[in-house]
Amino acid sequence: MDLYTRRRLRSRAVVILSIGAALFGLTWLVLIVGTLFFEGFGGLSLRVFTEMTPPPGADGGLRNAIIGSLIMTSIAVLFGTPIGILAGTYLAEYGRATKLSMVVRFINDVLLSAPSIVIGLFVYEVMVISMGHFSAWAGAAALAIIVIPVVLRTTEDMLNLVPNGLREAATALGAPRYFVIRRVAYRAARNGVLTGILLAIARISGETAPLLFTALNNQFYSTDLNAPMANLPVVIFQFALSPYEDWRALAWAGALIITLAILALNIGARALAGRQTSK
Amino acid sequence: MTFAAALTVLLLLGGVIVALLEGSWPAFAKFGFGFLVTESWNPVTEQFGALSPIAGTLITSFIAMLIGVPISIGIAIFLTEICPIWLRRPIGIAIELLAGIPSIIYGIWGLFVFAPVMQRHVQPFLINAFSGVPVLENLFAGPPYGIGILTASLILAIMVLPFITAVTRDVFETVPPVLKEAAYGLGCTKWEVIRNVMLPYTRVGVVGGVMLGLGRALGETMAVTFVIGNAHKIHASVLGPGTTISATIANEFTEAVGDIYTASLVALGLILFVITFIVLAAARLMLLRMNVKGA
Image 1 (cartoon, each protein chain N blue to C red):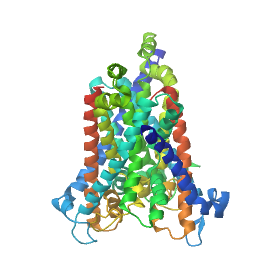
Image 2 (image 1 turned 120 degrees about the vertical axis):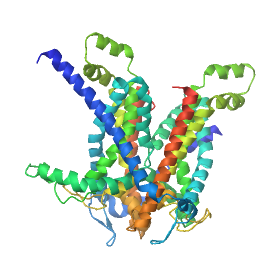
Image 3 (image 1 turned 60 degrees about the horizontal axis):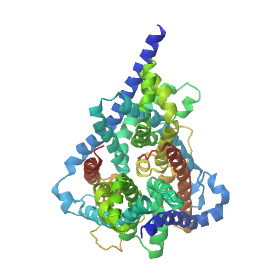
Image 4 (image 1 turned 90 degrees about the vertical axis):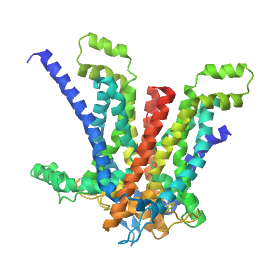
């Protein structure tokens, strides 16, 4: 075999291996989503949304868990988003190249992928111990801490995409700095920032580890924010590891609901981002 | 106000470190440095050592990287060099969706679908294939439980794929087309362009992406908790059950009685935080040099 053929064959081999790798990656997505539909679809009925989590052997649904998850996610987004947006605004608008911004940006990037279970431990130490009991507030706080870096990052990125010409034009017309940011920069970056919020919601709605010892779980329906609150991920965790068939079926149904919601949020976020940058 | 919000991020990090130090102090005070190198984990006698969770964390992440990195780079090469342009976006998004699936889903999928396959087909095959081969024989020894270190590592490998792929693809895209065109013009094959032009140009960024994936793998909790077997023991075989730092905390924290038990678990959390912080910080510094934002 001459050199030329050998080089071509080697190149061909790498191309085939890469295609194989891509197929391999896609296979898992199909397998996992496929299993979820196969196992979860049977358990999915109206009852899942209208009835409470049952004791083993009885009929029931996931209503309290779904509502609990919605409540805690909403609170987390309500508190985490403003901090993330404001901090992102600082990095992009006021302190673009200051030392502090560099440090904050760096720390934020580290927090972005820090293990969520450590966040749970932190909130346990700070809130659960001082309050003396597990609570929905603590769960929401842990989720809010996860929201902040995601929103901060997208806000900064999106504000950086706003052309400086727009800001200069507004300033030249005599608009003060805060006005330029609020009425020009925010408006131009709105879709992008919304994308970030959607991605943050997608991220926290599946988080289990930080809720294990903050919000704990609750077998009953409760909207008391000072008490442990049921939530979908922890219920899935407990039910899936239980020996009871009907609990496992509910766990699969819950898993399907969460995954579909998250995939929808992800795709929605991408569609929104696509409109903004058409990248 | 924006300044205060920016400071909040720093305060959060400081708060996490201080709270974990405070919470873990009783454990470090009692066991000292020995905490890091003791294997025994006995809630009854209140003897705790972090060696087996630390070892489990490092081993699972290492195997996950061994499998995940080449595949991720392969996917990135496919996406930037081989894939027809109209397919690029859909496949890219599909891979990124893999990152969106919450880890608990990987966990129950791993336990109910993947582990039985491992138990019935993959593990018996490995045990048979390597019996009689020195070293490897011990590495793949023991009854096929289905769950265990290897299963957890494989799940982790799937989970880090999208993260490494996303970063690697982004750094591959920073290679100036002129460089590639020049190499093609000299008669290089596709592989030679990738090997001799793209990889050297993007090396720091690719390593950064890999470290980012490693950071994820080290801290991954729920998926691992389901399939690792939760045994505080270091096995010579990768088929045996083990535990990781995060799985130990997730399993035992709410049931821990006594200050020392709780403090030991918080100490584990602190160790995990320190390890991942170092890895992630290194990753970010490398990516900063490449000027790539990453996933």
